[in-house]
Amino acid sequence: MAELSIPLKPPTPENPWRVNFDRSYFHRDGADGKTWQSELSCWSPTFGSFHDVSKFGELTFTDGR
Image (tube, rainbow, N blue to C red; front, side):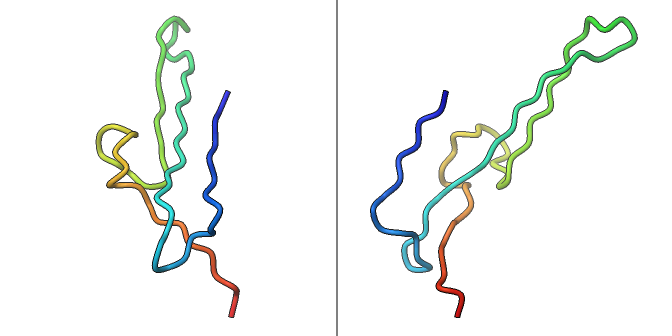
């Protein structure tokens, strides 16, 4: 389940959205298949908690000109 809230005004270079896209993947590893391995990745590394908004990337829209 996910919840998303989108502001009414699109992001601009003067007022960007702070965003990050994370992936957590868990799989069995090792010869016995009983050991769990985790892989964590994100678009904008936070070097700690994935919830540190101050280290998120900035998203803006342009009109393509």
